[in-house]
Image (cartoon, helix red, strand yellow):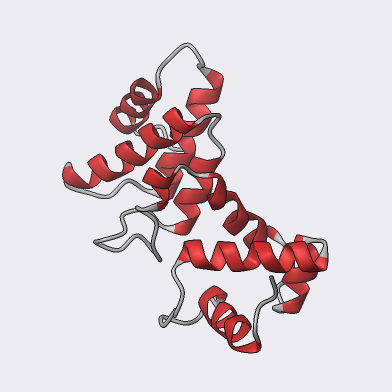
Length: 153
């Protein structure tokens, strides 16, 4: 499959971090980027196509395609009301080892908003790092320890 010039233009507008108007949702962006990576042979080539300094953004978008559908349904630009998880947090979730942990982390993020304030990207990163250092603990226990202690690193 090849993208049309109009699809590429929508994609360019959607990955532009300096615009509020993004015509595509993040999952569609990721799917279109995957098509371009397959055509061009590398994320770096796609990054150059869009004038990006490196392929980090491209790789992060591609990583959200590995998330379970239950988590994908929660992803939106910047974590809006109907989409509780932004692209950066979705990327962080994708670094977990299995679907069960990915779903658990998504629930932790959603439930943190119920407690009065949204969880931060740094807190999500700290929870995941703490989980890696303490594999005997469940993800929920790791989140409780980080969020109660304020140990955000």
